[in-house]
Image 1 (cartoon, rainbow, N blue to C red):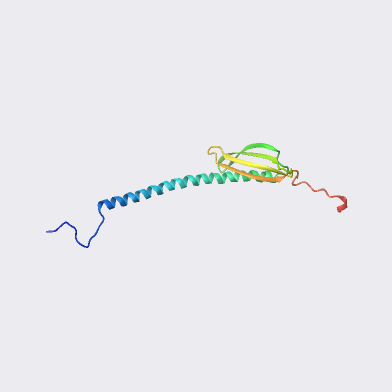
Image 2 (spheres, helix red, strand yellow; image 1 turned 60 degrees about the vertical axis):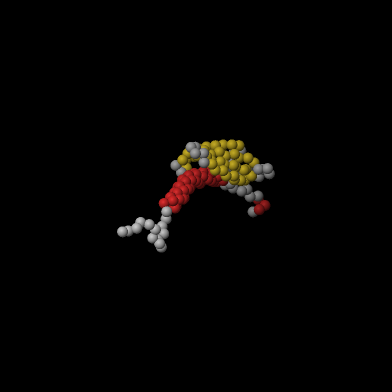
Amino acid sequence: MKRFGKISGQRGFTLIEMLVALSVFSLAALALIRLQGYTTRNAADLELRVVAQSVVRNRAVEILTDPRPPSLGESSGEQKNGGLDWIWTQNAKLTEEGRFVQVDITAQEKVSGAPATLTILRPAGAVLDAPQAVSPAEN
C-alpha cells in the first residue's frame, strides 16, 4: 500500500507560495504593459514635436534667405508638413542696438496643438543680394 505523505528529501512549493509568486508576476506584467502604453504615447508626442521643429526651421530658412528683412510686427500663416496642418506665427522686432531684427517663430499643429518655438537674428537694414557700392578711390 502506498502512502500519500511527505517523503523525506523531496520538497515542493505550497499552494500559498504559488499564489504569491503568480500575483507578484502579474503585478510586474501589468506594470510593463502600462509602461509600454506610456512609451507609445510619448513617441507619438515626440514625433509631432520633431515635425513642429521642422516647420519653424523651414520658416526661419525662408526669412534668412529672403533678400529683404522681414516686416516688423506679428504675422501668421498656415503650412502643411508631415501630412498635418500647422499654424505658424512670427513676431519681428528690432534689437536694442537696432542692427538686427529678432524674429520669434512659433508653430502649432491644428488638432493636437504640438508646439515648437525658434528665435533667429537677422541683419536689420542689409539687403542680402544687393551689390556693394565701390567708391572711385578704392579702384
